[in-house]
Amino acid sequence: MASLSFDLIALQLFAGLALGAIYVLFAIGLSLIFGMLTVVNFAHGAFYMVGAYVGVYILALGGNFWICLIAVPLAVGLFGLAVERILIRPLYGRGIDYPLLLTFGLSYVMVELVRIAFGKTGFPFDTPEVLQGAVNIGVGYFPLYRLFVIGATAAVLLALWLFLEKTSFGLIIRAGARDPQIVRVLGVNVARVWLIVFGIGTAIAGFAGLLAAPLQGVSPEMGGTILAEAFVVTVVGGMGSIGGAVLAGLLVGVVVSMTSLFAPEMAKVSIFALMALVLIIRPQGFFGRAGLMS
Amino acid sequence: MNEITQPYPRAQALPVSWFQFATKHRASIASLVVLVFPLVMPFTALAANILIYGLYALGFNLVYGYLGLLSFGHAALFGTGAYFCGIAIVHFGLPWFAAIALGIAGGLMMAALIGVLAIRTRGIYFAMVTLALSQCVYYLFYQATDWTGGENGLRGINVHVIDIFGIKLDFINPLTRYYVIAAFVIAAFFVLSRILASPFGAVIEAVRENETRAKASGYDATLTRLLTFVLSGGFCGLAGALQALHLSIVPIEILHYDTSGVVVMIALLGGMGTFFGPMIGAAAFLLLENLVSLWTVHWQLVVGAIFMICVLFFPAGIWGTLISRGKP
Image 1 (tube, rainbow over the protein chains, first blue to last red):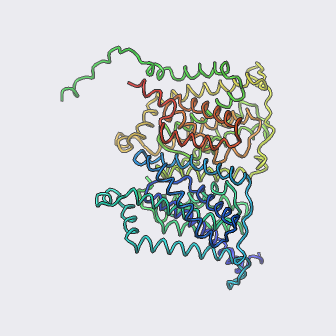
Image 2: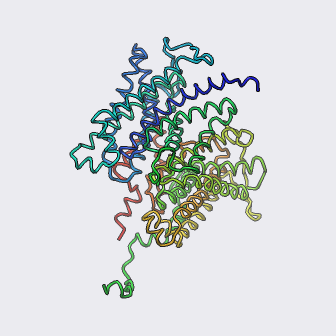
Image 3: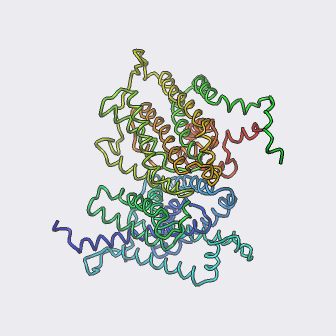
């Protein structure tokens, strides 16, 4: 196997990190929403898909990719706020399954609306001109856009970390995740906090969809596949844990990338094998609290 | 205090409400409805579809309604049943009854495989893990092209004549086909009704209602969950096998996430945790789907919206809302 040099493996590792970055962004939103609201957002894939299509729409209006980077999370986040306020809020306190079922129905509606607006078939999404080409990263040439994805993900993570750890609102969010009742007793409007958390989570999903669009193209079904894979990420990392989502997201990306190098036909199945392994050895995931799973 | 120690007074012969009557004879009533259904339903192929999806939802409801675990991976059980039945006929040339038996076995086996992993998680995680594992099954069957036909689906499941001890039934005739399928569905009604009425059926509901108490009473909650999931796999495998015979083809979409979603919608629409709910849900869902798709290709929009309205305003479903009046 002379062709499998160290450089090739290192390059594939980087490709895996870029793929993992998308998983990280997707899973973080999912985890943030679950950690606070105990809502598993089955429409998260649909928000991700809508993010990519909002990007398509802005580009068609004559905007550029940099405007998209700001406008897409804003638009998708605002939509998320409306969804939480109108559809999910009436379901709090009615059992943990109901918000899940509602968002599941919502994902059908969102996918079908996008099909009506943009057509049933997907299309490619051009990589912005400045980010085309490849750069030498020491072990070989690596697509610039993928480096940008890794960088953008790191920036979002840093911003989210600063927001959660260094602002007073972040403090309320963390306290609310631990014990919403006490936070409510202290006079905090928890409903508003939940609303904003849902908005942030969906905004990040939209952002992830936009970042993924040049890599995979856009199609109304693009959210369905990543949803199942993101569930693997959250199970492996531990649900509700942001650190777990980051580590597991990158790990899943690298596992997919490596198996597609060594055994391409097993690439899709490999991450589910990883999840099965984690479930057998450590059912609560890397960073999950024991007992949260049960 | 004495009230507790005294023997429980014998129940007086209260007038039996229609609800109690329906519960007692649930399997017979459901069978009767199934037998006369083609008389009111002009499209027999659709009626057969309703039976098959109703049976699929019946198996799903055992896990969701009675055990209280939301599974988003039942397509794997349904699809494995269909593929096993199809493979038995296409690749091994087995007779139809052996193929159906293999379909049931496939459903049971897949449920055991998924169950062993998924049962380790509870609540909301169960939905996520079952979804992920069924996605894994989808890819496996997709890639085993030699056996499953991959993207094109498994073609050539041609059963024209059903031979029962020398009596030959024309399986191409839609009405005969309906009644052959109905025979299996009716058998499933009686088996399910018996399971639910058995002590094990009581344990299933005990685990749903209060796991700690069930454990304290000496029942193994984990084993109960696994067994129920596997039983559910048997019903779904049978439904899948009948679907393979009915369609003469197993499309790969049968394992898709959407097939798992459809059964959740059917169970909720009909009324989860009720005996008649799944069948009523299947009839309502498929009729709705057919009607809406006559009018627009975007039927998923309408179906998704109706599902959301159901979750928000009628969580008990059609049958559940009806019987809430008949219950004592």
